[in-house]
Length: 247
Image (cartoon, rainbow, N blue to C red; front, side, top):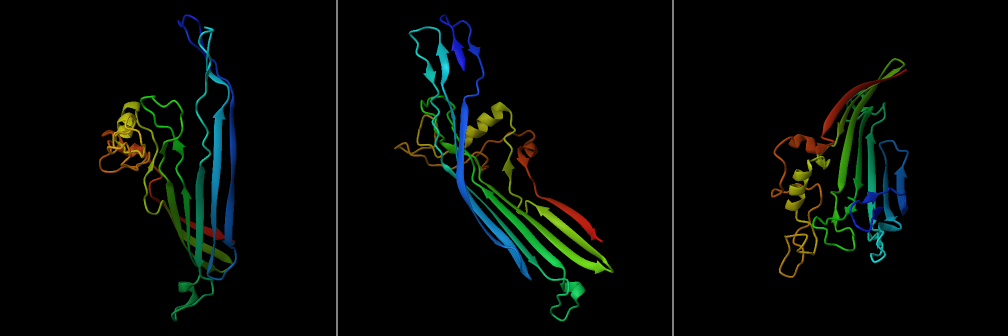
């Protein structure tokens, strides 16, 4: 909250905890927990989150200046998400194609794919919107991890060698860690689906948005900083190899 004295020489900021959040939604889960060759689950749901600041954002000592209320309006738009896990495996004693069980048994191929719709935010660089409703969106998140495992027995010891591949399809995830001037240039180069020529330049003659970019997208026309581009991404594709021993 800001306190503005009558003569406006000094402005005082005082923090207040006047925010609330209302989170609701639903989730469905389908699972196959037993099976000789395949198990897995599918989870899908929707979250609806509403946040709001109560009270006034500015209070003036001058009685002719009324307090300014918080004009950020909650929207409560649904945010879908989901996870899919598949586990394909062969029993230890499994034999196929005339091959011994040690060659065809004990294999596991498992994957986990997750999805999260990008959050929405207010894009108003010129501060012209009186009612601050979300008009832009962050990039959706798709991520797939994979594990290949081969198990076999050595006496009473079970040995398993595995290879993990994180971010299998090497999708780029934006970390938003640019310098302010670089971030401004990047956002100005995006073509947001905003039907307002005062905010988004890429509109038709009727003021309708022509683009559909999200924060985090990197089309060919986007402006990225030349320096340290490798720092702009998180969760690159990576590999891990290991051996498990069960006695």
